[in-house]
Amino acid sequence: MTAIHESPIALKLGAFVALSDAELSVLDELHRRRRTFLAGRDLVLQGQSDQSAYILASGWACSYKLQASGSRQIVDFQVPGDFLGLRSILFRTADHTIEPVTNVEASEVHARDLLNAFSRTPKLATAVLWAASRDEAMVVEHLVNLGRRNARERTAHFLLELGARLKLVGLATNAGYECPLSQYMLADALGLTAVHINRVLRELREDGLLTFQKGRVTFDDFDRLVASVDFDKTYLDQDGPLLR
Amino acid sequence: MTAIHESPIALKLGAFVALSDAELSVLDELHRRRRTFLAGRDLVLQGQSDQSAYILASGWACSYKLQASGSRQIVDFQVPGDFLGLRSILFRTADHTIEPVTNVEASEVHARDLLNAFSRTPKLATAVLWAASRDEAMVVEHLVNLGRRNARERTAHFLLELGARLKLVGLATNAGYECPLSQYMLADALGLTAVHINRVLRELREDGLLTFQKGRVTFDDFDRLVASVDFDKTYLDQDGPLLR
DNA sequence: GCCGAAAGCTGCTCTCGCTCAGTTTCCTAT
DNA sequence: ATAGGAAACTGAGCGAGAGCAGCTTTCGGC
Image 1 (cartoon, helix red, strand yellow):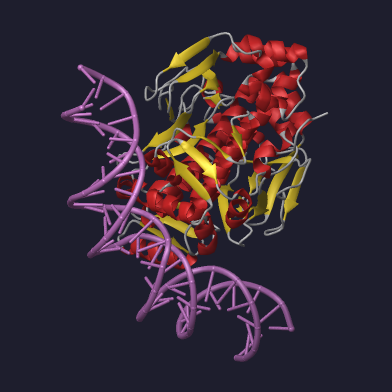
Image 2 (cartoon, each protein chain N blue to C red; image 1 turned 90 degrees about the vertical axis):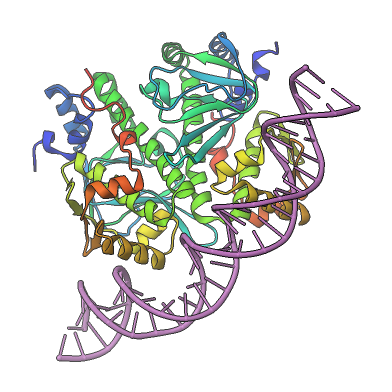
């Protein structure tokens, strides 16, 4: 197993606050209860109570709400370093389902342990609250995405956001990243149909902007892509790196 | 001034936890720094730092994100009893603008006072965190609204949600409520144009479901309306009333 | 190496919601 | 009373994206 300071969560939180050895070791303790989950088997279920939270170590997950009509809206994808169901440990009932997209390695975190860790290392608490606030900012940005951007901008913006998030944990560059999502999942996240996503991806490819193929996103012209959809990633960085 | 236990915030939190006199008086102290804000003058500005939070006592506000293109997406409206900018006191920079829709009375709350109140009355902390979680659940529901519902369902769902929220603070019944929103604001919240909102409202009126006119929402057939848009308000109630 | 399922891809038609270009109503200031 | 401005409302035309139907490629299991 890799050292804690190379773990995705440490990389991510470290981009926001400088973590001392003491804080890293507390983080390490939270990582003890390591579990593996299989793709497609629900991890947190809408309506269920007393769930644990998890820190995602490897693999991708997604959280979604199901409609009575059968259609689903994916609220967000989670990538390594992200929390799963942080809210559902503060509150009794989960209001959405979390499902692994790939096989997933995650550390179970009990409310007690987390609060305990907070009281010992306030800086860690700040960092985790920052992460929670960032998650909320992303949901808000997805709302803007659905409400005010067309299919093309929406798709490009979303794939750029994922890239920025993955870059933080060392899983992407401006060249691109490995992406296990199907076009169906992308459609459920972007409020579009898979058929239409397919056409939009073709357009983006033909325009030399990005290629979504064979489990990989390739930014063929990163700068032009960013400019063409007006992607402003400050909502992901919040205050910029290195508090204090 | 009315007694604290009749204030919107006490009514709202009281629906979730039973508040003792001691807790009510702590809540009362948070209400000391009462301010008045004029409609249309920004209260919290996107990108600004070190903002205060507020508890809304009377009037309506809205929070939105502005696009480079000029269009805006309203993330949510705030009604009496709601917090404004709770997140921006935990974190340095606001990622959205908050603007009073009407003239507004609100109590300024400093981070210090809030955290101090939490340590004295843990039950109040639970209640406030519940409120924050409920706000997030609403944003998620708005996401589903934009992603997976058509204009008619979207509009009806949104007005039903507002009704449910206002009922909690005694400002609505199943018959309807006073609503200071213009059709333009409704459009910006629902990702539609004002023109189309207008047509949808006419349809809903002609179908005898609801009337949106002269600053008032009237539910002409509440039950049929709820059924027709599959409105499930559990995300607003979370665990139901009266913890402990 | 073959089979079946899932994912990816394409063409055609239709409709929901946007755009543009107004008119009408109401509200406020003079 | 009246002008001016916002909000509400209407009609005609158009286009982005949905729905449907079918084809092709990829990939895991035997």
